[in-house]
Image (cartoon, rainbow, N blue to C red):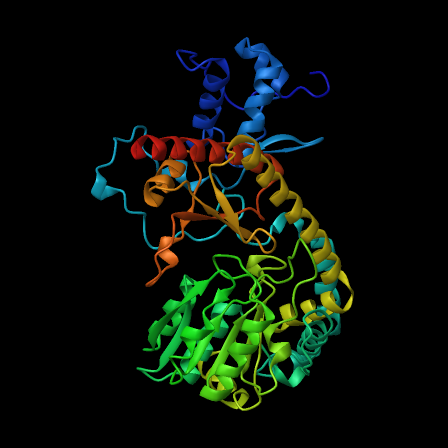
Length: 489
């Protein structure tokens, strides 16, 4: 057999052209073979040359088919290694029936519970791209952590987290988020949701009033509700949370905010409103929970210093996470606690069980100290900006005048406002039929009523996925605008 030629792993049937055309028929044949596991995970596909000879098609046609399969997550293509079936096939196609009847109006409600974010799925990919994480650097940090760990450190860790890691976090916050703090104020968690759960268990009694941004982060609402809190939605204005409305709730126990990149609308809270928020907390003797989930990714200028950096009365509880900056499976986050709350939170943490392993903490402390963390942030910021710019260019070219966007200046997502008169639920359903999973703005609202919009996560998508899925999204926007115009006549 000549170099570069590989046998077909099984007898692939000749695609039936029918009304689809050669390209679509070849795509359907290969996709069906993958879904039915006749081409199993990890299997190396035949070369385009081999298939072209076998099926009587041009290599150019098959190159387009292979690129489409790659953009949709069915296969991966690596120079020198060929094309292989991915280990994870998009769930939508595994569960979708062969034909779907037109839904009745009452069946148009979105599936619940809400969709979870995940890498590689357009457009719920609102997390760090694991493919950008330099495993070789992490391996070196793990090796050094294991080599330097004492027997005592493996079994008698500080309940608030490893001192070396807390010191690195305190130094990072001082240098890059403008917060003057020390290691004793830092508590290690598995992520921001873990921190919110600890706060709800430690600070709230049933019936306590908690103010939340509306629309806002769904998990925060759910966690505070589980603690029996009385939730008060505070509307958002163009610049962020309405601090005038907040003045009506001086009896609140705490307020939860995302000032760097509001979740989900994406605006940045200006300094004037930050100061008003802190003044409210001082007079109300309430706590402000600052969720700083993706502040590291700002594409226009250096981000504003954290709200906590302005806190002179020690009323702000700062929450951060490495799961958004490195990779989701790391499960390491942190809180910066006011001195008066630390004993209470430590007691809750010890009662519920410490969740972050010592080795992971040792390795992360080494990773930050070595400078690898900041280098990874710079590389990721550049990659995410390139992906955002490509998506925005596609939408501007292919769907001009059919949408509005906000929140694109920072973070891992932007908000896409649909054409006036659009049905948000119907738009999401049409997108799902094409493999695009979208979260709607409506499900993030409590009392607020806002124009139809969807949340677009782009960070954990490849450029090829953005090209293909961005064009699909643009076509849906054009169709929605046309339909809204026809209904308005």
